Amino acid sequence: MPTKNPRLNIVVEPPLYRAMQDFATSEGVSMSTVARDLIREAIDLREDVALAALADTRIKTLDKKKALTHKDVWE
Image (cartoon, rainbow, N blue to C red; front, side, top):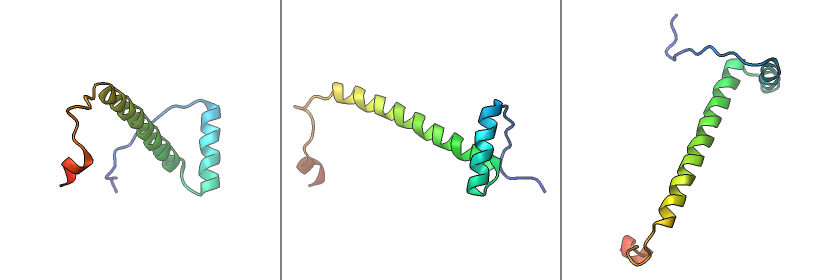
């Protein structure tokens, strides 16, 4: 039966493979699940870094005289 999700083959160093194998065993899941979860977490972290950089840029260019107050926005 074909799978609905795309497949990915990766090559990892032996220490990384053993660590993933240990995670899978201790969590009672497949190595594929461990790899998927680690990739998802890494993407989330990169997105957080990018959004933090965007926020830093925006706060530096904020003109407080033009900014709306909480009251202005919610009334």
